[in-house]
View 1 (spheres, rainbow, N blue to C red):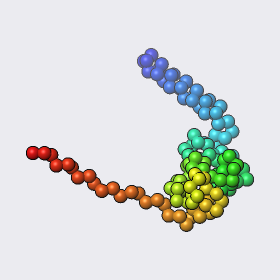
View 2: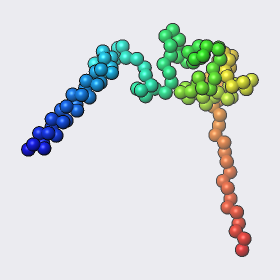
View 3: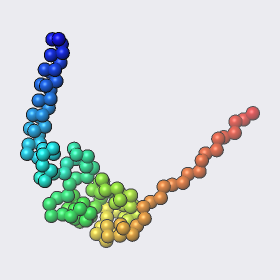
View 4: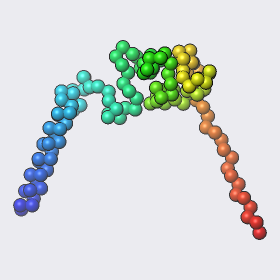
Length: 126
C-alpha cells in the first residue's frame, strides 16, 4: 500500500511541476487557452523563420533576410517551391535570385529527377 501511495504522490508532483513549467514558459500565450496572440515559432514545427512585421510572405522582400535585394538558396530554405526551382530561375548563375528572377519562379518548371540506366552486372570470367 505504501508503494502505491508513493507512486501516486510522485505522479501528482510530476504533473504539477510539468504544469508549472508550461505556464512559466508560455505565460499568457499558453496554446491551450488563447491562440489569438500566439507567435509562430520553430519549436511549433515551422521550418522557416517567421516573416518580419510589414513583410507579406512569399515576396522577395520577406525572404531577403540580409537586405541585399536578392535571395540566396540559404534564405529560401524552408520554402520548397522556391528551392526546387531555384537553379533554373537563377539565369545569371550567381547563386542569388534578383527581383526579375524571383518574379519568373511561377513560370519555371521544377527540375526533373535524373533518369539513370540500371547497371548491368559484369560477366564473371569462366
